[in-house]
Amino acid sequence: MTMQINELITISIMAFAMSLDAFSVGLGMGMVPLRLRQIFHIGIIVGIFHVIMPLLGILTGQFLSERMGVFATYTGGLLLIYIGLQMFTSSFKEEEGARFKPVGSGVFMFALSVSIDSFSLGLSLGIIGARLVTAIVLFGIFATCLTWSGLYFGKKMKSLFGSYSEALGGVILLFFGLKLLLPI
Image (cartoon, rainbow, N blue to C red; front, side, top):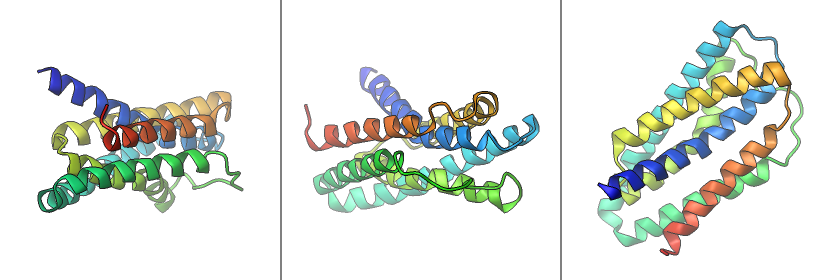
């Protein structure tokens, strides 16, 4: 029972960390005039992508884990460290212009861009044997809610702390990667 609660907490923190990217980008995109209906649809689409990408990663990771054993756990840890460092450093790069237009294929490109790294995280979770349904449901819920929050607050407050939330997400993933490599 305690093991299940610990896994639930760990996956929730990871889902939150991965969704901070959608939140931070949503903060910036919130400056684009959006109706609440558009915010709702964008959040749902991002949530769906945050279910599909980690699901594909988890299934791939489970397959690799069955064939690679302990080596797979270290690979998962290294992937988490890589993703965390990438999120952290990219949060301080200045980007010119908006990343997406909030209509048509632009919404799907936005959803893909903020969920592509969740494939790698899913790969790590599959390698270490995380529960499939729990992980993808939590990823979807956190991504949807944080996207809605980012777009809505971005609309209200402009981009007050956008890049800092992505940096925080990177640090959290870096921590979990180190935890896998250095069991304490």
